[in-house]
Length: 362
Ligand SMILES: Cc1ncc(COP(=O)(O)O)c(C=O)c1O
Image (cartoon, rainbow, N blue to C red; front, side, top):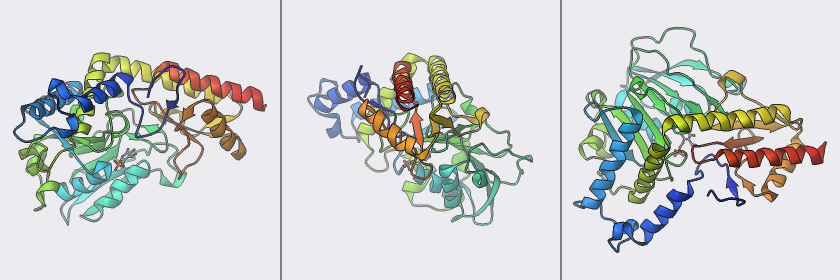
């Protein structure tokens, strides 16, 4: 939650939400659009209020992506990022076919492992052997026989971020969970992209999936309807009871993003991450980890100069109401997530705390 002098939550997800979104969500829980009903009680079938909510959320997604509804479908699904790791190969990777994966981090790797259950996987490039401190480099052109290529635009755990989509002639699928709508991006380069909501898009419980309509013609096997993108498109994301509240919060976030403007959001994200990386480099008690040119603007990952520094700084920061900065358990150190809802002044508060910690410990 964002309030002056209160706790700042830099967690990687569930992440901070703008105070205006929290207030409007709280109001909707008590009385949704003056109906006397809570949004938590809103029926999803034959209900104009829900239809309007779904419609607005979908058209905002397309508008913010610069895509049109003749070519693209917007789905709100459940099961998180992990469900997409399996749904993509289930739908598009035949038993004897091969899909290409770029292994740039923990989640990218998991997506690749999930695909192996359904067909062949070609790892196009990997930085696993160097602990994912940099992005993998493609040494050859993407083979044209692949069913699709999957990549992860931002590696939440290791703090690296792709600056450009890759060039390929086969369908391109992307996990954008931790950096969707954080910068201006050519979304038309992707045939399918998805993002869990609990980072830049609201709360856990719903996952945004955008796919080109052509993809619905490329489904390779008979699937239970709930796992079939084609069936989900036909049922307009309401095959089963949808998480109405999570979609509502995502819609409020989309309105918030639209009002601020992605160009401004991108500028702020650059400024926030530059300020923090500069302090990490200047401060004698911390060191950055990711290769400089691959650094993420969303998740800033760094370590303490000594192991003891790490425990001490976590306690020091917590005493100063700074939470959610411990690194992922597989990496250790620190991870500060600078999603769209984090303001520049909050990053400045963290930097002040880092400076005070240095003064008191050197
Ligand atoms: C890039 C990325 N993809 C996928 C996931 C997994 O999301 P979920 O826990 O909703 O399955 C995460 C979680 O943090 C993530 O950062």
